[in-house]
Each structure stands twice: as structure tokens, then as C-alpha cells.
Length: 179
Image (cartoon, rainbow, N blue to C red; front, side):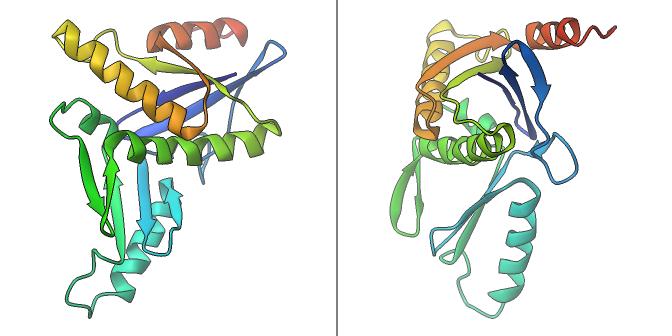
């Protein structure tokens, strides 16, 4: 089972194998992966620091083209966009992408890194969430469902939501740390 703290800026993942909780080192410099997604016209995806590097390379490579964003796209703050109920989709290389698909692709890349690091294919995720995603109950429910749909697109078949503070407490207790 993975515990995922998918934040607007950064993402971290824990793995619970046989009761041992491990903070997975998925980022280029540790556990933290910047919550960024890069997509290019050839169908390649990258996340985190790699997405930043590929975005910079693409800007340089295509700088003399009159229109460069038909070659690549760079996304940040996708979690924040989930809160905008009016944001349903965007065009990427002439194809309609739902916001759930964008978030799902980011999470699919996270899942692939986590599966590789933990040497197992995991389909269960507990996603950390704030107490309230929206002040309006119906929006809160809708946002959680959008997030659940994104997780399913990523390959998680069993998705649960938990409060972030609880995950930190559980992690500290399991590691017998003082907080």
C-alpha cells in the first residue's frame, strides 16, 4: 500500500510492506518530487526535476519556432486546478485532456517510480487530503471524486483518503520518532 501526499508543489510517497513504513526516495535529491508534469508531442511524459530539465531543453530547442507549445506542454499546480469545478479539460496537441487525466498521468508516473523503488506493483493508495477541500460540501465531494478518478487513471484500483496530519502521526509512531 502506498501513502501519497500529493501536494500543489511537491509529492512524497510512503510504502507499507509487511507493516514496515518506508519513505520512498523518488526525487532526484531524495523523497520529494516536485508536482510538475511535462508532455511532448512524441508522447513522452516526465515529472519532477526531470520535467523541469526537459522543459528547459524544449524551450531552447524550439525557440526559433513561431509556435512552440504545439511541441510540448508543462503543467504545474494541477492539484490547485482540481479545486476549480469549471476547469474540465484542455487541448494538448489537438486532443482533449480532462483535468483528471492530467493529474492521473502525473500520478501514473509517481506510481511507476514507486513500483520500481519498492519492487512491487501496488494498486492500493491512501491519499492525504486536507480536512476540507472546499467550504461547500457538494464541491468537497465532487473534488474528492475527481481526485479518485485521477487515481484510477493512474492505475490504483483501491483508493482511500485520509487526513495528512494522521499520516504524519502514524509515520512517526511506526518509526518511534518524537515529533
